[in-house]
Image (cartoon, rainbow, N blue to C red):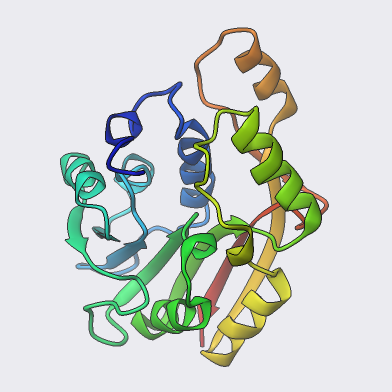
Length: 222
């Protein structure tokens, strides 16, 4: 599917438009680098959508994905692309200052192994940032039934069996020394209205009171 959609990665009004909005929101959780040679590992980097939003923060940005066509685009947008499974990262323990897991956890078949790898890669004091879809009936309705059938998301891109319960994710991170805090987010209603009126510009992601659909997380490794 991702090979078939490779030309969509950087289209402002393409099928991956919301991933651009999420990348901008995730980047706001990434602190500026605090040391020379700081490393940001981007799990499930896709076409490299996070790259422009963290370009000035002082990191060597390394992206991991299994889709070669996506990695080609990621390499053209300022990151070092590596073809690898995010549940088996080819990096030393404690080598990363930041690990980003954006819109990837709801696609992995072994959530526990992927979270363990993300936390293993972090150095003490390093930051984990992520966003994902909740394992709820409401999320299945909004993100799969509605988004994939009438909202423009690619058909079949999400497997409802892989959606991620926030409490479980917090517990998995805690077991590996990362105290994760989560909050719900959603697209700005004003931004969606502008987009519906024909404005192709980005839609800001804003906090919301519930983690029942889409949520982001940030935690620091002890």
